[in-house]
Length: 81
Image 1: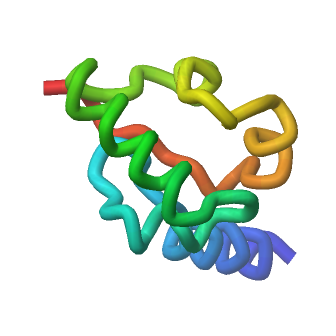
Image 2: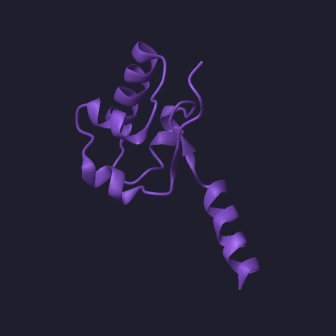
């Protein structure tokens, strides 16, 4: 059973999107993100260096709690430089 759980967690990590590194095309793979919102995320990221946590995504127009809930477990945030 542990092996199966580890395998599932590993696979989920493979499909995670790093918000601080993702291209607009990669961002569009997330639920509820089209070209416009993907561009807004990249623009916000370039203006603020990076996203420190998922709650900071709420500062992007059009991103709400629903987006965070739909994509829970698929979002990662690499360290800010």
